[in-house]
Image 1 (tube, rainbow, N blue to C red):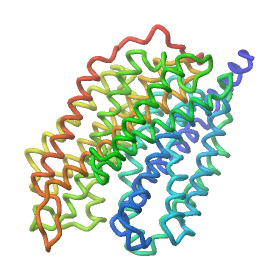
Image 2 (cartoon, rainbow, N blue to C red):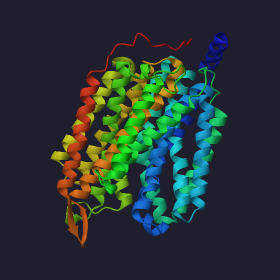
Image 3 (tube, rainbow, N blue to C red):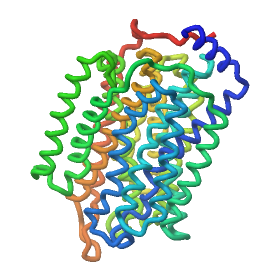
Length: 479
């Protein structure tokens, strides 16, 4: 069996279509991350469009977040066991189904169901990264990983102006028809170009562990994402948060005591893996903090300290960060091979510190925010490229899907926390404009300070990540 796997990998690494494989997986990653900014242009109008309360329409975003967090590590494990391409195709099929359901819906229930199914597609990115390790030659792996990982930021940055343009010119349902068509095209490309996975992890799927992880994550993420609306000390928030933590502790105890766990927590506890995942939380906070703050600041009326841009105009100001991430990805891979992914992560964190520090000092002109976003693009481009490289240098090859999924989960925890904390800050620091409270300049400044603090934490954690390869690492047997 082992000989057959090695023969299969040798055939795959000599395939002339390796560039096409990378391109298709990158497109899949872009489609996946696009789902997070898909409804941003209509978010404030959802109560009117869906004839529902603002608290109910918040579930259009929350459901996507929960599905992404729960499904990503589970999909990674399923990919390790049953084939990564197969699970990628399943997730893309869920994206198409969710898009069609939302596109045909006129009420809130259908849209929430559709957005939940769309959120599951987030697992495509860590699975795509794991596929690259399986099928590419060693010399191409790092650059390809950097590109796929960058799509986490690129898709959102490029997708926001596209969504804004669609909603300005047509009905909101068109957003979901576009996402459904995109998912169908990517499904066909993956089926055609990406080879069948030949490396599998034997064993049974841990259904109890999957249920426990899902329940615990849903409790914690509900407390984080809805705490600002429910009240941080309300019974609902405390019950979800504390209950989720208790469930996760019991889940961890259980996972350490079974022979075939959903996630091998002993591997996850290795210093390089643990510290990389902790840095991912802080890096995710910095990224999403900028995605929340800069557009709002650009769109606010000039009289309140904003710049008075339209949503499309604000999106175009933020978009260069995504372009920088994409352009830097090949360079990130080569730099990682030269100096190592740990130093690359450090450089990314330093760039984020510089970007937020610059914004705190200079944010009076639009061009200054463009510069800050460009530097953020450098930081996220380097940081997001480094993290999966660090993970895959520290885990057995049969666990790359689950381990990358766990890393993506930690990034999601960072982005979820940023969304809740920044929203709370901007909601409590307001000024009156035409009788409506809007975020104040002091609120934006405090949000930038929080982004700077998260970047500093990412930098400090990155400095402690071991630079040597983990002695337990299983190296890929590439020719």
